[in-house]
Figure 1 (cartoon, one colour):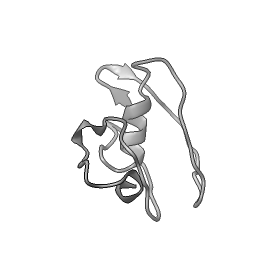
Figure 2: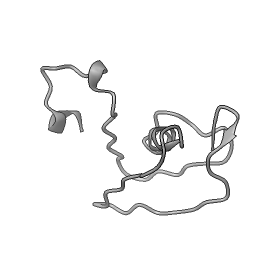
Figure 3: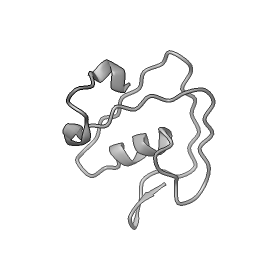
Length: 76
């Protein structure tokens, strides 16, 4: 997975099971949002595949685009 010309991830495999919650920690610009956006299906990796089964909930960190009349729980 790349963010622009930078390689973020290569040759990885992991599973997130139903009910699991994940979080990412890293420096600004490390690719945390890029990865979460791809996992949620809102972007595709430049190479490789992401296999999703079931539903993925992703709460974007940029709330400026959110409808203020909708609660956070409703958005998830």
